[in-house]
Image 1 (cartoon, one colour):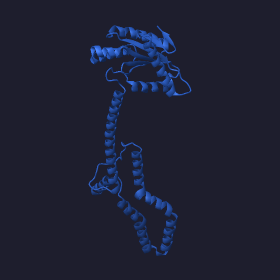
Image 2 (cartoon, one colour; image 1 turned 90 degrees about the vertical axis):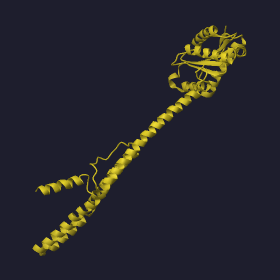
Image 3 (cartoon, helix red, strand yellow; image 1 turned 90 degrees about the horizontal axis):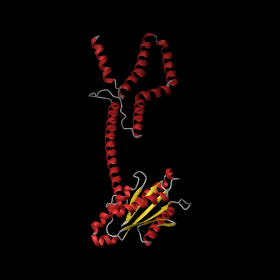
Image 4 (cartoon, helix red, strand yellow; image 1 turned 60 degrees about the horizontal axis):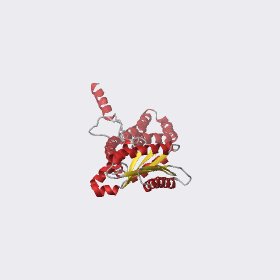
Length: 317
């Protein structure tokens, strides 16, 4: 009895992951061929006259049960495991590589589908590791891209946005619906007689003056809303979001006073101010007109002797 119990437990332990295809075929042959044949032999020995009736019953049963029985045999032999494998592959294909077959501890000899499932588990594990590595590399690449993109939009001398950065941020702000009804004002600044600073004190002194001007613009800008930038050379600007032209004018006056305290030689600031107006012509023409108005106002201030602010459409001494 102990030997039988041991053999049964050993069989269950060996096959708890499922029978191999060969074992299933043997089991089906036993059930469908050997058992009926054994019954026929027993009936032939004990009651031969009922043999024909028995065989006819087997034949009728075979015809009736052919379709459901063939489906059941196919499912038991292959389809059950194939459906599990198909489900597993679909999950992996959808991008979830954390899925695994629940399998018993590995045995020395395992049937075909068990080996296949273990290989699929390993494949999913390898894909998950590779995916994690690729995501890490992608994140690093993305950070590097953002860093270089940031550098490409910054002025290396002052740390302000450069012309490209200004134009990019202008397009983003105008295209953002949150600012559709808010005023957007542009201040253009030009350092008058800046060339004299370079000629008299040297280019290093000129760079120092530009850095001072950049710092003044930062100090007079709201860090979350306004965009100070260096347009090029000794031309600077500030894009104000949510401020009207008159408010920008007051800030411009403060900027002139602050600059006059740190200026070199006879340099002064000419400042022009314009307010963005949307039209049916679209962003490109509206923004070009916007920039041109602020630039023209700064040019007017320079022609009037500098050290002053001009708003597009009028002159303020």
